[in-house]
Length: 537
Image 1 (tube, rainbow, N blue to C red):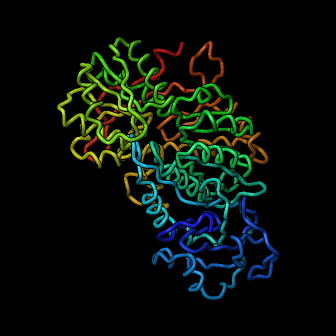
Image 2 (cartoon, one colour):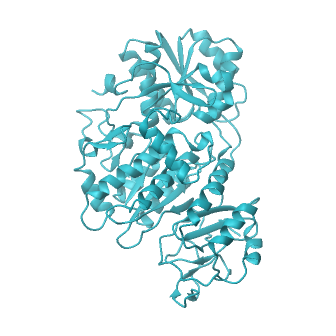
């Protein structure tokens, strides 16, 4: 069956819809909207006798599932085919009004390991689901839906949607090469659940679709198109290395893009429909030269994966370094595939004599480089972005993690002395998210903040919340305080590159952070004001 995975069942409960994918089949059931790629058969009837449209995968019959059955299946890890045989007769209860449904398809592909390859995504995502669902199912009436669509994985969360509701899409790669962000979905879901529990936005409930790009350009473009097809009122917390291909699709559909984590694509800092909370990974790299200088360095070098976006990041970072008085050595490029020994590249850094090295190799490549650098006695400062080298990587490096200094627009997600960070972690706890470092990282915090930013903007809208009304409201919104972590002023963002080389990037300070094993902590250095300040124009 298209979309079926092998191995144990994987579940998602979002709003009033359950979609299960497992070996041998999917659970299907009643919803008010067709998942793209699904066949719509004759009308089914709910237990109360109401006639509705029924979604099925191929020839599966309409099937109703009780919340008790779902909880038991989660606990037992029952495959979908077995679950159907055990479920018994349909529970006799009215089915909730139709809600939006997302698409659930084949899991992330596994590319062979190279620089930055991270293959932990699948296991981490299942860990999130297994823990998050029981807490949500208690409050929700449940039906099931299967889809054979083959665009990108997605799930829906929270209540509401449909006419008069609010619908957001959240996009990131999970289990892919170079980028792996299971925390993005976890953080966004937690915010949606908390807002809906508190009454929603002016009484309107939020629905959310998560779209997994899988680190593949075609899947990333499919996610962008899906935002338009699904009628998303905004795209939130987008972490996408293929922004040059995907943002034009979002821009053409005139969907506001709120809280994206930019990797440096040109459109990210000029498009009038993008509203970042901070300059993202691109800003983290640009902040690194000042962090190195504050740490005593007089020269630096960038080691980057040999991709266009990596080379651009290195060039911009080098320009910042030169602007603040550092000697910048020629960049060192690492092939995207086939590298298992990073010792030659660490040796090139050592031979360059640089006092500091910025590592742009992704999570796995970054860890491998740190180990190689230590093995040859490289004494240079080691830096990177906290979006790629976070708590999971700190745990993987152990004692060596203390050598890393990473930069971020936010404090560490481990620092519970910061009220906003404490609230973020509490809402993850309340939503049943595992205490797994991979699910409590900075990209997830950014997604959590993006949902709150969008909700605050939506509160100012009288009437229906649509992509058009959101864009209009964003053009007027200023000084939205997001838990003292960042101030969101979308109306202040410009588009004139003659006046500002990065007009859509807000001028927010960055933090220098380091590690004690898996714990990320403040590095004790001054905040870095506006990473692009030295080269804005």
